[in-house]
Image (cartoon, rainbow over all chains, first blue to last red):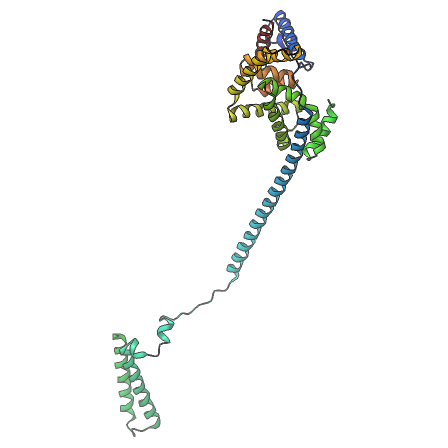
Length: 172
Length: 177
């Protein structure tokens, strides 16, 4: 085996040392290299070469599998990103195009308003209901003209009742 | 040894995952790489492992080869495999000691002259420092130019030349003594 690879060693050495020294150095290297030709290294066994070729084939399969898996993972990742982006985009679009609607909600909870036990909720509310009933009766009486010609007094009394209820209501 | 166009075709085949092309690469370079590992380790069993590891790495990293001489890339990989082996397993001293012991016992026996000569070169190589031994074996087995070697070793070409010259001189002296 010639390790010089057709290089001109003398020329190479001349770049660093005198011509005479360069000649000697090149010759030294050539002579020393002969030692390797004289004492060749052992060669690999044919069984080893066969084993290596089998190992190489396995390595190729492994590499292809790894490449395939990497491609699948990449595709999945890209698909996930696209799906998430589309979903977010659609949601944003929906938000923008949505007409704002006023939503009314009860001040009191549904449980409170749906409770039939008024007395249990509030005693004042019971009084209020009673007064409302009374006013209702008076209005009915007025409509039927049960109190004769004294309509003016009746209306005044009704107004007073209303005023009283109003002040009671805000007092709580 | 294939010519450059054949080698390009084979390497392209390897890059495409062609098992036959990898087999060709093994056929072409196995002997030289084995010699390189053998001269560095002096142990056939370790050599076998390193050679297998090298070609598995070639399969894994062939896409990283982008032009230049293939030998340069291959022996850089081989050098990395060898140094990884030294670092990871920390067996270097142990290997040398075992090898030295084995060589001493072998030379004591009556062996054929050829075997004795091979062992003698290995014994003298083992006496050199690691860097010089690696440089000499790389120079001989890789067939790289000095420019390529100096680039691979990240040192000026003059340094590579003088190191190799001194190393080979020393080796010759030891062989003659």
